[in-house]
Length: 229
Image (tube, rainbow, N blue to C red; front, top):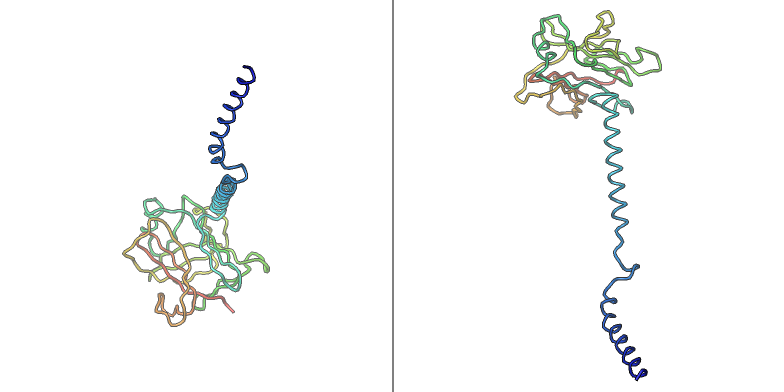
């Protein structure tokens, strides 16, 4: 009887093992299961890269503010400028300027130019190396209302607050071509335009040169320039 019972138990166990075998076969082995590690690592790398890029952008804005850049003589010509909105007191004061008065940025740092070469604005030269012979030209920039229109003042004090301009440090003044636009900007915007030869562009005689564009509200200012010999 015991032998019969033992055989029956063994037969029952074998049947159960055979029944469960297909189920086990359906389970992928550890080596055949999809490995999610690469996707997770890729996502982590992407997140880290995005975080690093955001950190670099914050650092850049802290150092430069908004930035306009242009390659000139194989190096970077750079203008850093602050966020100045048209609903600010600075803009209202700007629009109220009388002839002979220069704009002030009472709520921000001065607009700063760093140039790797002397610049010629229609023959008016902004010298390179005004701080040191072997150092790029460094100036703060100030729009000025004139009797006949507008000009741009280059001041030798660059790292100052926008209300600290010393007229005694004014170095060069170049004319600006002023117009109004149907697409006003909400903030002060400064950029460089590259005008190819033969292009129809403003200001006059700008073709083949670089153009500095300053826009604020419905005001637009343009000045063509090139690297001075």
